[in-house]
Structures are given as C-alpha cells and as structure tokens.
Image (cartoon, rainbow, N blue to C red; front, side, top):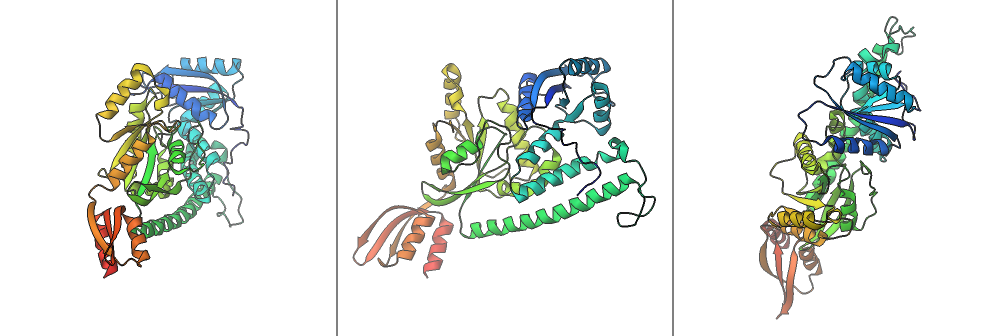
Length: 430
C-alpha cells in the first residue's frame, strides 16, 4: 500500500556513512561517551558506517533546529568534508527541526525514534512482529505529515474512491494511514486474545512462567540459550531479539516451567513501540517471576536498570511480582572490580552474579529461581495404590518427590508442593 510518503530505498542503505550527534541538554545521568557508543551500536545494527561522533552541549533547545546555528555549521562542514550522507541525532526531533536540519546539513537526518523503528523493521521476523513494527512506524509518521511533508500539499483530482474532489493529498494520505492503523490494531487485538487463551491454558496446567527482561544487549538471549539449550539468535548487537521465544525448562522441584525471552528495552524507548508491542509484552505482565538481566560491566548499568524499571511500570507490571537481578557479563570483570561486585551481590538476596557466556553462576541462578517459585511449598506424605501410575506421574509433574517407598500394599511418597497443588490432587483423587 502506498501512503504517499514511501521512503527512499537508499535512505538506510547498508554501508551508508553517518555522523552521530548527541545534543546534551543537561540533567542526564548518562555518560556522553557511553551514550554515543550506544547509538553507534544502534547504527551498526542496520549496517550504517559511523564516521564521526559528536557530543554537543546545548544550553537551550532551539525550536527550529534544536542545536545552535554555529554548531549546525560545524556539523555541515564535517558532513561535506567526510562525504557523509546521514546524520543521526540521538534525541527526539520535531518534523520542523528534522526538515530544517536536513536543509542546513545537506544530508538525510533521522532522530533516535526513527533509528530504533528502522532496526525493529529490519529485525522483526514473525507476522506478529511485522504488524507491531508497521503500526509503530505509521503512528510515528502520521504526526509528521502535517508540517514536514510539504510536497503533499497539492490537490488530488477525483474519481471519488479515495476522496471527493478538492481533498488534498495530505488529507487522503492521513486517512489512509488511520485506516491502515485501525486494521493493524484489530489484527493485534486478535493476537492478544490468542495469547490470553494460551496463558489461561498454561495457568490451568499450571506451569509457572519466568520472563527474562533487561536492557538491549544485556545478554538475555545468551542466558536463555544457556538455560534451555536453545539456539535463539544471540549476537553482540542491540535488539538481536524482537520476537518472543518460549521454551519449557525443568527446575529443582519444578518438573515444568516456561521461560520467555523478550525484546530488550532501551532508554527513551519510543512510545509508539511500547504501545505496539503491548501484545508481546503481556507475557512479561503475566509472568510469575521476572529475571532482570543486567550488563553489570557497562558504565551506564545503573541508568539502564532505571530505564528497564520505568518500562516495566509503563506496561503495567505489578510491583509485587517477584524478581531477581542477574548481574551478567561477570567474565568482563577482573581484579578488584570483580571482587567488589561479588561481595555486593553476596550481601543481597535478590541478586545473582553470572556469566551467561561462560556459565559461571548460572546454576546458582537456577537454584534461586526454583527457590522463589517454590516458596511457601510444604512437605506432604501421600499414599497411593502402587498400580496408580497416573497419580504418581502427577506428583512428579507438580511437586518435588523427595523420596518414595512401598509399605504393605501402598506406595508412599514424600512430596514438596504448593498447598494449592496438594488441594487439587486431593480433589482429583476423591
């Protein structure tokens, strides 16, 4: 479907030469160099070649260009000298600012939201993921038609099938976008209902759901693969995982649980994406336990933690949902830094230091997850008919069989399980 604002196919061509501009408006807890490094990683994720990185101190944002005219002139000179075709502003730009900067710099300009949307568009693999990305992209572009897309301010002649005579092209395009977005939302609502049915079925089973959450590139997929033996894409790239992946795992005392790998979060995650990916993130909202995977070796690890917690609040995660912090990438630390980290982790009961890459600490994490999920379980002695294999299998599936023996004509099982499961077993047997 053409909506009148189709993108130039070469706009994000792989190998495009780019300059990254970080307008530092003050008040940020983030290190400017780390922020530039992160944005360079985002650009790398779509094959853009970063030629220059510039951090600019901004006293007051300019309504027309965000940055000052002198700063714009310096960037324009660099763009010309280095034959740069793309300027990535690590900030949110209004349509007017984007257009004025393109005029001043004489190259294509995108902001942080546009860059993230481009990555998501390239990475989405499932039909659901593509629907979510398209909805987010249309939502982003819809707000940019009125003032930015001046070439659309022309009259559409009319046969009446897209609008009556006199309707401007921009009005027709906006209507097409609204119609398409409405259809996408209906399709995603259907996906959400299907997921809800699946969750209801799992809860009746019931199997606990564990969701991995964290900042992008924190190592969630590597940890997921380590625990499940799966081969989910796990590369040193931002947003390597977009589409959710669920696998069955066995834990100490828990025969079956569901582990979910989810999309990574990022600072200033576009609101369009938070809304569009709501169906996917419902797996996180309904989880029994969250494992917050943190890149503990990253200089901005505290700020990244705060960003993740902010997104969890935005999507409606219950603050009471049990969670464990997995301080990942322990393999990147040594000496005093490593000793200090291990000492701090050892003093907290909600933290486990791990290296998903080497496997260090992962067994401890698994044991802690199992302990959290079985918290409140009690020990029961249950007598069964030795020939009742179905009941014995049920006990193994829903509890931890500590020991069993045959006494007279009965099979005796010592089982640790949740009181609710014991009640279900008694009801089932009666």
